[in-house]
Length: 129
Image 1 (cartoon, helix red, strand yellow):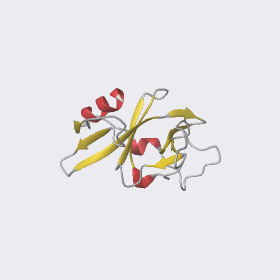
Image 2 (spheres, helix red, strand yellow; image 1 turned 180 degrees about the vertical axis):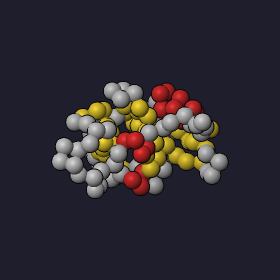
Image 3 (cartoon, rainbow, N blue to C red; image 1 turned 60 degrees about the vertical axis):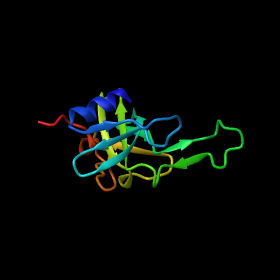
Image 4 (cartoon, rainbow, N blue to C red; image 1 turned 60 degrees about the horizontal axis):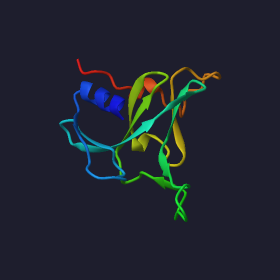
């Protein structure tokens, strides 16, 4: 989470931390237009794409009501850090599916497909200049 926080700060966002445990939001960011709820995730580089979870799993809890819980209505963005690319990405919740996982393409697809492909470069956090 610290790598994401540093990248967001370098981009000029004001950061706020929610108080308490087990909150659905890890950070609040302010950009001059509003305050946005952010869930931080670690992405892993797999087959040329950063893969990250877009829901939380509760399979380790005894008798969970549901094994997966969506963040729909509870966060506005996913902030993803990938150790392999050393990149941080800010992804709107509306841009990704809300079940299981999402991918951000780092390298071109082998078959040249471009439709329905989220390019990591579109979401990469870059310092404000």
